[in-house]
Image (cartoon, rainbow, N blue to C red; front, top):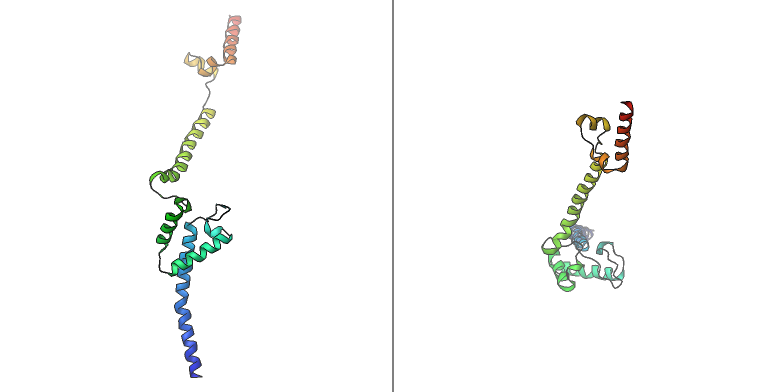
Length: 164
């Protein structure tokens, strides 16, 4: 009975000690799977954590064995970059030409926003009416440029001449 308690105590200690290591390894593996793209033969283009092909399963086993051998996540990622190039990364690096992949979407959004603002402001710009044009003594730019504006001016002149 006493030996049974000792065995139970030893098993409990092993479970408590192995639990955090297992959680740590799973966390590290998840970080690796998020950082790397799947390099399968059919070129699925998925991040490794989302891929379910056989190549992804083999890659996970390889990654887990490298983690257990004592390599860090950064070292493993660098090994994959050295082997496959930067295309294996799920996100571009934030240096050199790849920096444009981070900046350009925001720049395009800002430029597009200013363009849309300019178009909307041109649509809702108040048009100078004939009454305002008469008070200021000059034609509105809208009336001078459009054929209907010319005809309106001519009609107004004809009506004024008939009244006199």
